[in-house]
Length: 218
Ligand code: DX5
Ligand code: ZN
Image (cartoon, rainbow, N blue to C red; front, side, top):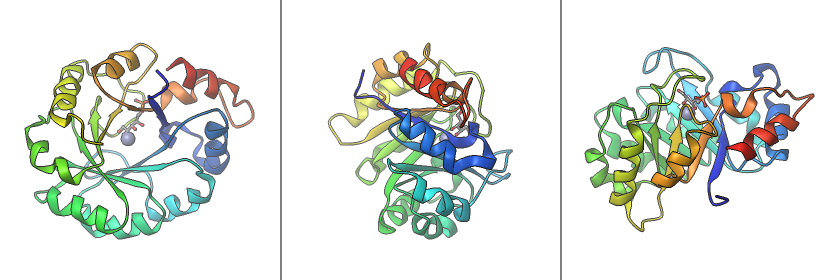
């Protein structure tokens, strides 16, 4: 389905060549570029902060989709906005004031995303629906690429799509997306699929054609 957007996660790219990797995946037809920010506290892994996001910004011609797996979030929103994020996604579980966080993301001029861990229900999304441009359903426990898709989240996405109705809100899926799991989520109502290992496997900046084949296979 061509209305489904593919957002490769650069967590699976060559960290020594982010600029070239981003140009390669965009040339191979990806729709968005997904940037996983981890703090070693909210999730058990560390990646990168606003200076790196700013450094890669000129290479991203599509949409820079920044997924913050950090707590607290609020002190860093302006820095990630100024670094050039188009979408900033914060986790519902990252603190007691997600409503304020989403307000702050929009006030900083970005689209606001709300991420849910696999163990989190969709009830708490209801009163946030007029404040979000995207809901990200995690289909692995966040922290690492290459984990196994959690199937219980298909039903969650179906119910979330029902709750969202006609509102212009993207449903993004993050974790374990492959050519096998992607159709389940497209059918359940998702429209943005993040994929790390499934996009970057078999390719490199010197041999980017597999990226395109992988994107088209999803
Ligand atoms: C997980 C990250 C994901 C991850 C996806 O914490 O948020 O974006 O990189 O990687 P794959 O597609 O390999 O599961
Ligand atoms: Zn992510």
